[in-house]
Length: 373
Image (cartoon, rainbow, N blue to C red; front, side, top):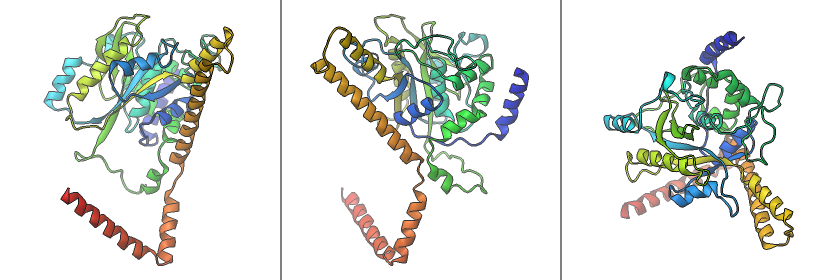
């Protein structure tokens, strides 16, 4: 029964395993959501907040001007809120709670450490418009994914969303933290060296004021014409602005989110660069294949420059995916035993002392050059 499941969540929340930190990388996040069974989306990094960069999300290639952008994921250095930061937060809007939360807006509070990356991603996926949600047994409630234009949520996340749809934000957070499927997928993208170096007999070191602590939040549009900031450390979603739901200008909501992000950035030193912004967008391969089919339908031959250009872009996308898979395999591999064995071999062959002396000399020379400059 539902009551039994809720009790299980509360019990499991205290005994659930640890969540590791994962790298803020589009290849990692795309592979993570695909491991949940999500289809037709990927993550892409934004290097600038100018209008041209934002427009490239919805109009990535010639002939495509309505590609889906489901939400933004923003990574920033978290700082304890000073009075000025609190005032800034109040200027953006206070967290909505209870009946003030818009109907259908999924928000979960973060209740476990290191889960903010996956929680921000889930915040976007669960609020994606026109997403295809699977029913029990694997069938979708909607037939057809509109040639890959619609996000397919997959069985795992569909079941989770359906089960937690009436939960309060704190219990939704507990449900995420205690989900073996979600936690296992998240931890599979952690570096194995972290587990190798940790001592299970000692308590984990907690971050101090001298440490850099980073946090992920999400920005999503809602059908009521508002953009919301979803931060699991807040009591509820924060309304950051309104946008016109204009079919001819689908990036309007992104500009509203951009303004909210810039407001956050203004609270940091101009020299601070430790930020990362990614968008959850339509899989580029879907509309590239769609363009190929459209050109073929009007009789364009394969050796036509337009066809060749799109085929080359599609090939580049496949190469990008292959590179992501290679990098993720390297992230999963534990190189520490190899390093330890290498050091042992160097020491056994008598080369270690010479290499250490050379390294110290090189380091000293580098420090002198830095002091002179």
